[in-house]
Image (tube, rainbow, N blue to C red):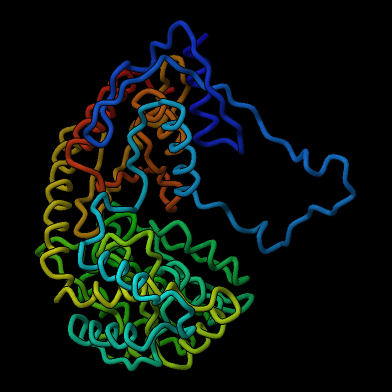
Amino acid sequence: MANALHNAAISRVMFGDQYSISRCVVPSLSTLPLRAMHKGKHVELNRTVMVVKAKTNSDFDDSDVDISLSHRVNAVKLSKTLSICDHATALLQAGVPVIRLFFGESDFDTPGAIAEAGMNAIREGYTRYTPNAGTLELRQAICHKLKEENGITYSPDQIVVSNGAKQSIVQAVLAVCSPGDEVIIPAPFYVSYPEMARLAHATPVILPSHISSNFLLDSKLLEANLTERSRLLILCSPCNPTGSVYSKKLLEEIAQIVAKHPRLLVLSDENYEHIIYAPATHTSFASLPGMWDRTLIVNGLSKTFAMTGWRLGYIAGPKHFVAACEKIQSQFTSGASSISQKAGVAALGLGYAGGEAVSTMVKAFRERRDFLVESFREMDGVKICEPQGGFYVFLDFSSYYGREAEGFGVIENSDSLCRYLLDKGLVALVPGSAFGDDTCIRISFAESLTTLKTAVERIKKALIPLSSSALV
């Protein structure tokens, strides 16, 4: 009975609708170990189980209020990564020793010089509104960075600083796309790209790629799918979720195709540009011949400088387009945090590509990547594309689909496999369906090596019964 309650609770909290969670002590709960490893620390557990109750719209039961929502919001899906984060956190708070390998957030602290700059801003009273587009000091620092590191020239009036790169991307989509336009999105993709297109009443056109080609966009497939309605091509390199890096040669092929379509713009998401592993190198799309006028570069400080909570990103591009993004922001959030912008100036002042502080983090990420690649290459039935950048591995587990797990049921797809691994292995991962490729699962290695070793042990142990079960 206790095991059944535990399994149902995890399944419903992880992937169900909204539920409330309570704790109760039971005589036995064999599915939970008494000691568990999370983030390299031992956690002492009670024998607990969660009772999950569905919430209702009781606030409106006795009201005549029209609770209908707009077509725009009804067309948009909730971000699966954020949903999984909330659910896994709820499990942890209930005493379940879940290892969370789903979030795109480094386990490193923000470098000291950056944090000190933020604290100094508070001490010195730099806590008021800034210009909507960002402080001149920060925009000048961004221009310098783009010139020195990417070989692209911009002026401060061609930069808009936002509350994270995600805001910069959605504002760009809203600024250039009209109803009926098409947004071309290679898959696997960052979870929010298609929903951003839908917010603009544009149509996301998904172009699949395959693990056999390192999840890189086929230029011939791109050319075959462009129409007069194609307005925006979104490229992400290094790619979230695959870690694939577009070579300069492939980008040049894509640029030649883009040049044939006067309406087509390119949004180049370069958030992971400095988390890259030699011999791979990063090329900014706007640096290619003829592409400056067509390209909107989006970047941020969250990934490179471990500044996710500071919420600071930016867009760079032709003034005509960037001014439109600034207009949207002026009626949306206005400028980014003054404190974060001071910290951003300090971050960009650490040296080329973030200097020693960033290179130390990248070295650790590479060690973790190598461990995961080696560990999963040893496993039968798992296909892997070695990531060249970022801090994720995107693994093909589809050989396990169609197998039945005792006490769980049939593993039908990436969602059910993730539910199973959470249930049996207490490891929270993101199903590939969130990224447009249901054959795979994304595992983040933005955690300590100790935590990753424990997680791999749990995953392998959980998969043993599946390996021996027959296909249904």
